[in-house]
Length: 245
Image 1 (tube, one colour):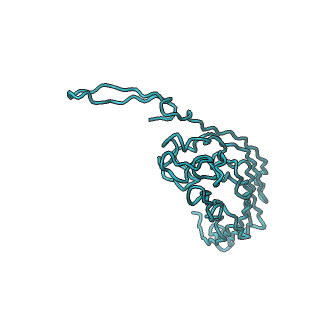
Image 2 (cartoon, rainbow, N blue to C red):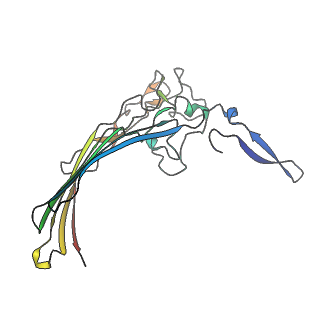
Image 3 (cartoon, rainbow, N blue to C red):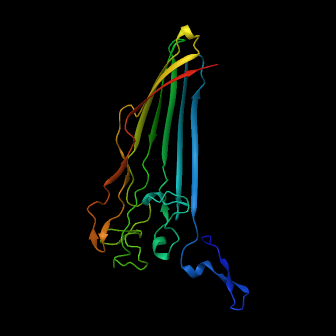
């Protein structure tokens, strides 16, 4: 079955043969599928001139609609074809908005400098705006559970306020700096290289996902609501060696 499309099924006639039955999408009382993405990418680049290289990218993008796709990452359903979307009319009520993968602004900077034939230093920076938070609760101000899905509807808190995706704030901006240095000794004809890469150089720790269940029972606020569940990866160091044939 495809959301927004009529579905035709083979059904037994009771005599060993099969007929067909068409169920119109309108019978489910759900909206048509809507998933849109638009982006604009710009960049400024200085080609390597034997001494240095630099590039700045900026991307503005918008991901919106009533479904993220074949996954539902805001509630941890990351395996393909595992999503609560389209299970019933209740979970699709107020489902239209900014989707979980909507990251409106992205800045990416990369550069390196050749100090001399043996030493090269570089860095790259990612500056990313936050993604939408999700607020889920019981259905409506009456705090109902019409489909036995408990805290899975786009209503927020014991008040049952409608909460379309993207209407309850966003995760913080992140600014991650990675640095690297490479040594190519002259005694190996600059073919042997030793390199050091430090990821998240300043060890920034920003929350990237929050607990989005606003209630622990119908009409009962959850004490864990919007507590951080994951953070940007901590600082790490990578050592490597290469040889050019």
